[in-house]
Figure 1: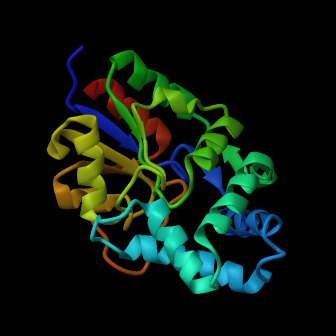
Figure 2: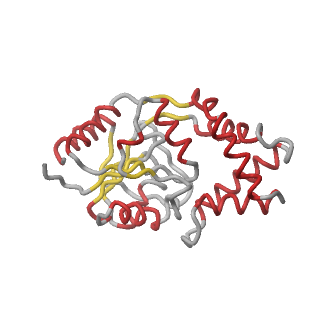
Length: 238
């Protein structure tokens, strides 16, 4: 079946599922803290984690994977062993992630939307901002009945060198999918992070129900609307 696009990139939070992100971040840091409270107080850890995520969003040199950049930063900021911080984080991922599930909810229409894409045989990327580990991204999918294996690529902090809204992020995703960015559709709800795909020539669709507008650069979407309107659009173009 022919398609107007060679690949579709879907944001995750606010696009394929609902999440109270401030509450999610609090639970994320608190969960990690339970595994390293003998090493550091909560407030310094929380400040360091938030500063580390900002660092990932602002650093565009592409020299380090996001996971490496984050833990190198945390070790320096907290004056603790990087290997020890990584070990405690691994413990958290093994036993503490389900506490985050309460702030994640499904979005109607998403299952039908993704099924239409799968039937068309078009490669899909789960293009969530790669500031979290794969384990947590797969867990968010699982909690709302999505299967991360349905995506040809999932961006996470272990496999990514850039973040949205950096142009390098979108180029990296297209390159790993083996497609020209100009033949891709980026679907998301963030006028800054997701619509920045315009910078590399991607077509963009802004989902409006859970719209995020940040300070900083904003791009106009090529298309906008609800999940149902996106579904109708894709049925015509896939």
